[in-house]
Length: 231
Image (cartoon, rainbow, N blue to C red):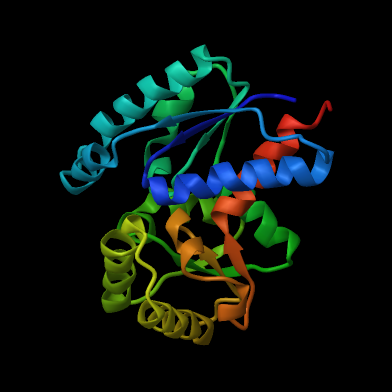
């Protein structure tokens, strides 16, 4: 089994899901007492969040690249950035290490294409929904991307940072998100990406009439596939 490196803590609420899913998937596939062989480097999200707000993406990239080097030095064979938004600095991180860095958009786009969809809704932080790094990578896979309107993007961003990052799960927020998804579908979305790792704490497939694509699960499933490829 290869060792999976997890670069997380952005926020730790979702990183716990990466760790849990990695172990559940390995146990399901190998049985017995098997669990995931992994290394976790969890950063202080307050530092990253301030850099996001201040538009200091290069500084954030340098910080995470340094952490990635430590993960590689610890013996990881592959690396996951346990957040959608910080794939904004994917190139800085990938360039700093020699091990593969699995891109969350690539594995998500593959799942969408395998489902036969071409137009996809995107939920995530304001950075993910509004900046080009995420949407352009989806577009390069042949997908048309639909995002919420200004007010709904603000709602989604607020719930992520003010609630989900702190482990607060509110039924009222879930209902509001169901409304956002409904309006994305009315605008042509055939499915919706849960493009923030914390969103899987709030939403499940039961909350929509179209397929939801949970990036955390898809990301860690791809990593486990690689880790067990030679097992």
